[in-house]
Length: 123
Image 1 (cartoon, rainbow, N blue to C red):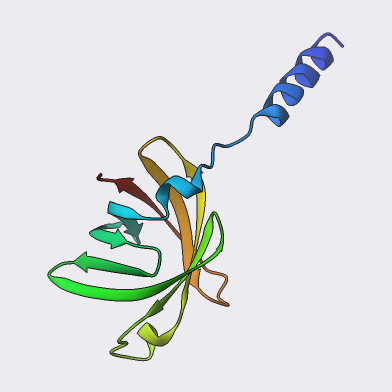
Image 2 (image 1 turned 90 degrees about the horizontal axis):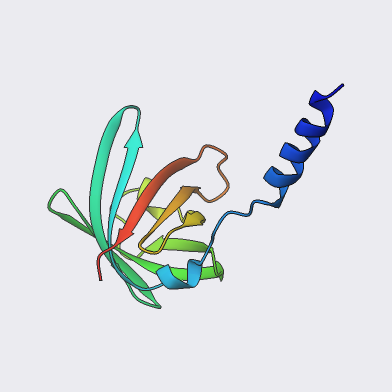
């Protein structure tokens, strides 16, 4: 019976914890990103303005239009898609933030399978 008050106190403390999300700090700037897919680490850099995002990955450049749904969710639309996959819009949601990075999940719009990554602000 003495364990019950301890468990209740622990649940109360944990339920009060709120994840930090200062998403506005990451709407524009220069970033470095890491995503692990099937055990492989993918790294890229990108520059985001209010209207576009230009990403650099393994010598390739991708440009997308940026449309913010709210402060923490954005839709990317590839400007010059080269194939059918690139024609699909990408939905990205910022899950948590620190002073210099954010953790996010993303997927093609309408798909349930999501990937997670971390982006670090470089400026």
